[in-house]
Image (cartoon, rainbow over all chains, first blue to last red):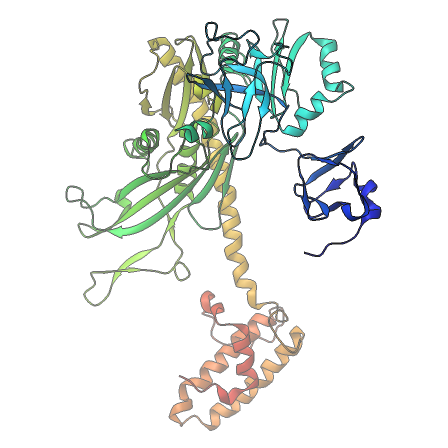
Length: 216
Length: 393
């Protein structure tokens, strides 16, 4: 594999479409800097190259990652996702989050959760959860609390309707400033919405009307 | 076990309750009315007897093939019909490769019953020699994508494939006049099957303990339905088969209402199948006609020299003249007797072909064999340029 020294084009690749093999940064020209790599980037000796096709993103001071849109979901830490309860075991619930494997949700990972007040989730319950651990070799671990231990809207979602989207559309719905689709819908109806980064969207219209699908 | 759980599709309680409450108000999630079908697309493959049907997201391929076998002892002058289904694992995560599951067998039986008991396919016309050789027609249905309502889609695929299948023509020949000679499709035009009528399957799904009913359920609706009923009718309103295997009980009035609806839908679907088959047959006939014009354009297959039409005609004429002289000279030689005449005849035919608008009709034999175009034009040209070389008999 030939390595091209394209250090002059690093800044220009940010926010552009990249494909596997593109060199993002040449590390020989930088020293004593910590660069954080997100999804889709890998370090090969002294270059940073792209391993997944998508758009290169940069956040100051030193975070780089590649955003791509797919039907599948690759679990990563601190993502908020929508999961479906598949089974209940002694220690944890088995939850499907559209990843390669099922995820575990410990029965105690709730605000004020003790052995006495374990929630009873039926099979098929929709949950809004946060990914705590995600390695490619293990089942991901989830939690219904935020980092400080508070409930913060996590937990089961009742009523409403759920549908599947691509991960890109889910990210677009969560972008700030507020996505225009959500604003336009809000002008006509009042609703509650939960968007999972794994490509699942749950919506409940607070008026008794049939909801139309949010097309991206 | 965990891997199998991870790979199956799961439905949430929210979706189930939502679809049920919407149906109680006669609304469906994809916006259809409860008695509407999804969009139906019927396509055909290159070969006779291969169909591809899409009903919404459901995708099924039908293939018909025939084989000559010995008939059953109790029906010595009837052919046989067999339906085989293959539920490909790519259609649904619930489909496992290997032995067909319960639903796969039910689907095959349902389509088989609709065709066989109503005598839609004429079995006696499949007989070649009574008691010895009959045609065994085999219909293979491959499920490519399960978007709900596989029964109706597979039935339409089977009908479309049967209507476009052509079996090779057979005659009795051989030394004792009892052998079956199967003619090549290039030699004799294959024959279509005799189909008396088209039994169309219409599937109904029941929800909320028999209160709500929809036609053509989607995958999600099928996952939460309480019961299912399939009625197979033809466009005349004859009921060919009715199947309701388990599930919620429904009252008789609902059943008769469903049968009436099925009669209307059957007429609609029959006309769609007929239109698709007609356009396929027209395209097929056009393809056959184009073959005969292969020799008209002479500059297509000449490798080195590109000659214009009239030039070749002139050359052919010139060679024909030469041949005539030669044939008169060497008429008594054995080896050449049969040949020059043939080549002359051949060239004359060629001339007729190439200069079809010229009035220099030499007056050769007019029994033009349409299948002689299997001889490539390069052979013709070489016989013109090297007349002596053409000495094989």
